[in-house]
Image (cartoon, one colour):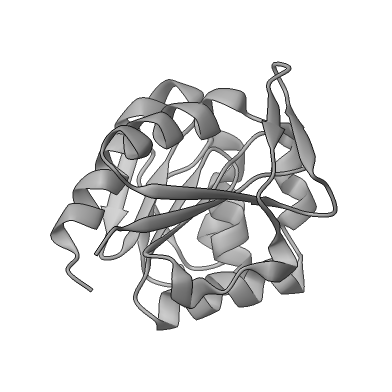
Length: 173
């Protein structure tokens, strides 16, 4: 059965390469991709990329996906304390889906409560918040702990995509 992944991006100011590089890698490996955002049909990245949004975050049924990927960039702050996004993250975690977050997006995972005792990385600005939520901050480019993969920012976007594919390939749900 074909693997599926949903990317959640901010309506504005998501990091273009944090969506585009992993998305391209996964699509090239045959993974079916959906892009979700909040209240928009077209999102605009921090570097100007215009992205067609497939579904509103309210329409995400996590049972339909093998992976949930949260893209960073300044716009991701919109989701830091969003109960709807936190519920999606918690549901994905309970259903043992692969969960990826890059740049500042690991803070969304931390604020949802799933990172307690987990090894994670992020953009350096998020280290204190992650530690306050009892995550173990590694400072690495990429950190994987079980089903959760985190990356530190745009420079790690390709490696992040490859690692997500690796986890999807090893996960025979």
